[in-house]
Length: 162
Ligand code: HEC
Image 1 (cartoon, rainbow, N blue to C red):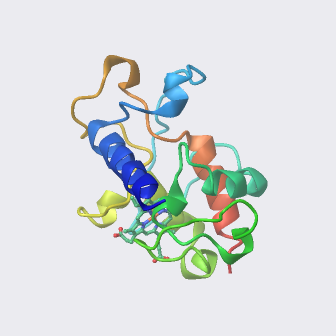
Image 2: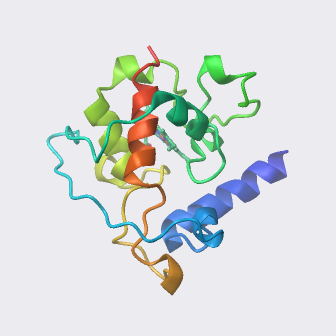
């Protein structure tokens, strides 16, 4: 189990630094290279949605999915999801319980889009970024780890965690 977690972590770090060499979705060929939606950072937040409103049920499923989100590799899963698929979760990062009480949707959006803007040394991948990456394979160039819709879905779920 421990080995499993650390190889996953390595894969994830690899992915965020090498820019998606092993992006599973891309490997299955199910995603065409999306363009990044332009966004504006105001203070510690991105207030405007990256696209159509998110769906909390999809976000809930995504949060505990290994690919592409993998949030619970590092974060303790919300309590309500333990037993609903999130049997194992990490403790490298703050638990996600209460995230919707601690943060606004806009703050959550910036955190997921580009947590390194808040903390350059953050372990947390910048999920919606395509620049500043090195050695990106041609097939993955220009693709963020998650789509705008997936990020909005996650936010719609996270704001319900109070
Ligand atoms: C590789 C580890 C890692 C992964 C994967 C990860 N995070 Fe994080 N996250 C962190 C760390 C570490 C912090 C603490 C702040 C920092 O260092 O940037 C954090 C902070 C946060 C915070 C603020 C926590 C708080 O309440 O103080 C939220 C919300 C968050 N992450 C959501 C997510 C979501 C949603 C995902 C999946 C899309 C995710 N994280 C994936 C490591 C990770």
